[in-house]
Length: 189
Image 1 (cartoon, rainbow, N blue to C red):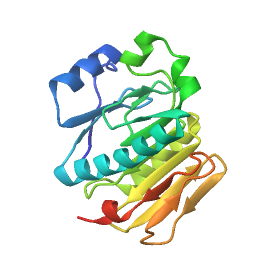
Image 2 (cartoon, rainbow, N blue to C red):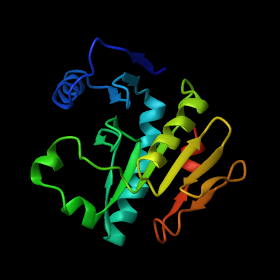
Image 3 (cartoon, helix red, strand yellow):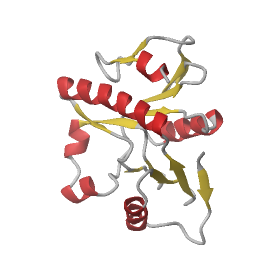
């Protein structure tokens, strides 16, 4: 279950990196208002994240037009928040435009595509708000995977589209050309 900490002042990027390094097994994010969000990662969530990340990474290596990231990668979005999607993808030209220092910290950009997988303790409403915030910050494709209801919601600047309940796969064209997300392993528990 995620919890939020409202501090007397927002944590800096460097402090957030240090907190993250000292507390493995937890995901730390900062929202646009400076609230610290802490989410423990359970075994099932970790398995699903790895499956998703593996599929995205394999596609990205084959496609060659961008870079895939796992759940430990943090991004400083234009609204000042720092988010760590369960998986994400950034176009190669945008990534290569950053400095080496920007690569090693929280990259100052919003990924082109983000993926979130709801765990049993996650609030679907909060994850939908998170997807809306990603859209507000420039994401081109948001994928919300809801294993409990076995549905997938796709978020694009033009609107939201839900996939049928219990789809076996979802094509993510045109944003991720040729990437078809295989869902059976994500539904398995």
